[in-house]
Length: 110
Image 1 (cartoon, rainbow, N blue to C red):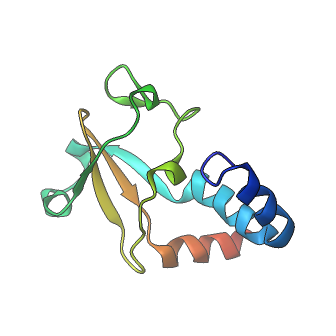
Image 2: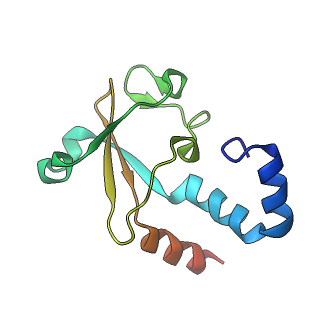
């Protein structure tokens, strides 16, 4: 709701309820966060650096998932490959799952 805005959220809820369900699924399952040390150098080579709001970070290197909202970052998924993002001022990597993988898992969940 926060990422879409109240008006758009209500419109989607009424006209496209499946979209809202997919967004909810994506917020919970569309990514993972790892420490850099557990991600291969090869994957980090082309990783984009991103900033996230400071209030989403606790104790320098832990994400506060109560506040974290992947949709607020407006990241674009690759169709068939994961995308890697270095989170600035941390030793964390956000790994965005592919569109194909997310859609397959969403359909399997239904």
